[in-house]
Image 1: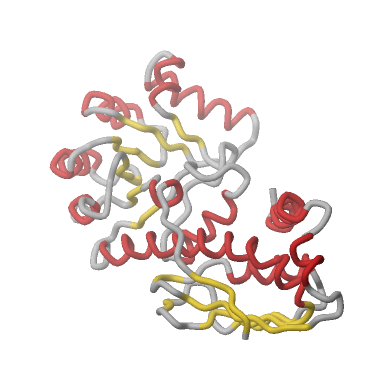
Image 2: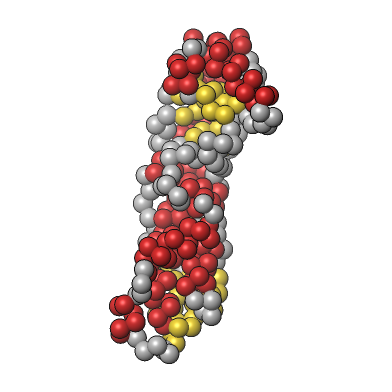
Length: 277
């Protein structure tokens, strides 16, 4: 679902047949101004989405961005101003805030981890652990925070995980089957395979046929040993319960990527509010 569709459906969900609170209390021709005030320091994300929300509710509203997505924000900063129909501003307010607060929370959390990785080669990745139908926005927020997107969905990268391996009859069969499928269907996709222990890793090294190896639930010490065995044959990715407290030790092994599902599914929204200007 693209962003415009998301916004249209979100407005329909929230407004329905009408914003009766505003319609019943505010004169139809009333004009007003409002500003978005930042109440918690972090990284801004979603201002472009908020602008689309206000425009979708009322194309005559004047929206002025004062801070761009990806910028550092402090308490008291004003992210944007909007002016025009008072009813339209109030109707769009909550939806715009919902998007911006969650996206800014994701961007802020991502940026904290990105800063922890400074000085290492490792890049932080998100996962598919996103809110259904909001993946485009949540992955956008990760980028605003300085992180990188893993595959977007099931169709843009082959990910051979433990269940695929078990159901296929083992690592060599799973890899060969994937490569055959890509060839037969004329698909140009990277192949990543998850390994759970050193025996599985050795099978992948011996067999080849993949682009990246995901080392799942390895300790930093085990990860260092695994990277020595891989010896740059494949891209490498560490995953599995990695937190702010442990991510630096994983990055210092020299692993290429570190994926953290919590970037998008365990997020505290950033505090901000729309007030009369």
